[in-house]
Image 1 (tube, rainbow, N blue to C red):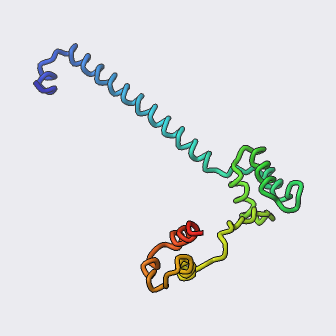
Image 2 (cartoon, rainbow, N blue to C red):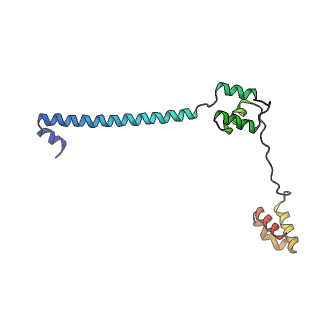
Image 3 (cartoon, rainbow, N blue to C red):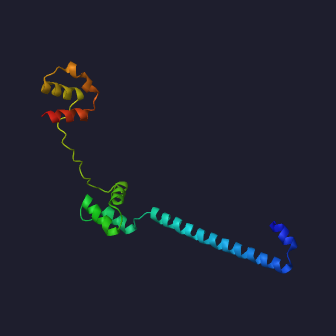
Amino acid sequence: MSTQVLLRKATEKELIGYIRNQDRQISSLQEELKTFNDELKSKQNKERVRGKNQFTDAMYIALLRGGEASVWSRDAAKAFAEKHKITTASVIAKMKKLGVPYQAIPNEEADFGKSTSREEVINQISSKINLSQDKLKGLARNNIDTLRAMLAKMK
């Protein structure tokens, strides 16, 4: 039987009980909805706080004054970051944005030997194995790193 048929045949006392039961279910759902909304707002607030500027006015002043040196080094930026519980990358990014002098770590270029072209490597390979370059034309399709590895194995 449908709910409508049951309600037509129900007594007044049964109807009051049914309505109270429905009210309890609605109240329960409203309470769950409120809890869910509160949790959602809490998560949104946490995300908003994380996204906010982490730098205080005192931190800006310390960055602009340069600390102990006139030019910031990576070690000084790291110490500043640890002191204020933020990342070193955010400190360096903020310094660059503010135009604060910062001495970046120089890129250490790896020593790959003198830069050689694919043809030069094939020439060296052909001289090692005493074959003409014409016979080694297929090698030109290989990656330069592969050719260098072949040459290194021959030495």
